[in-house]
Length: 118
Image (cartoon, rainbow, N blue to C red; front, side):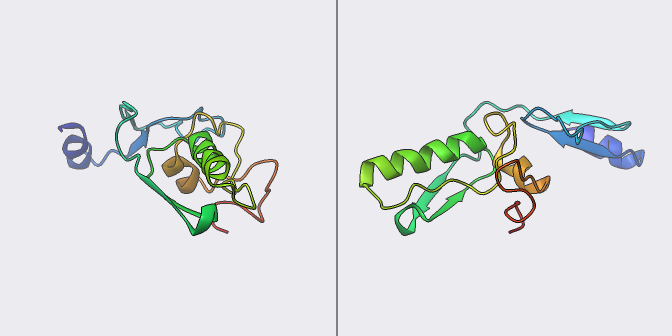
């Protein structure tokens, strides 16, 4: 509770991170690095809609988990298509959706045409 007010008082930038590998270096900083605890219980709600074509998720879900949720939905409901999220960074099994989105992640399968912004 004291880190952010103290950093603001001293005008020191704060970089936060929660999960992932930081392979591209987005958590490298010369300021304060705030490592958020991830217990695996927060910001993890989701809703699969439109026969698996759409999914609404909170930022605490791991990218690979979202793909497994969609895969299980496909198996359970026998939908015509098996959908996955568009970004497929190499760290998809360790990075959270919040980080995937904030870093505009893409990956080898989707390149820049299907990155987070598209």
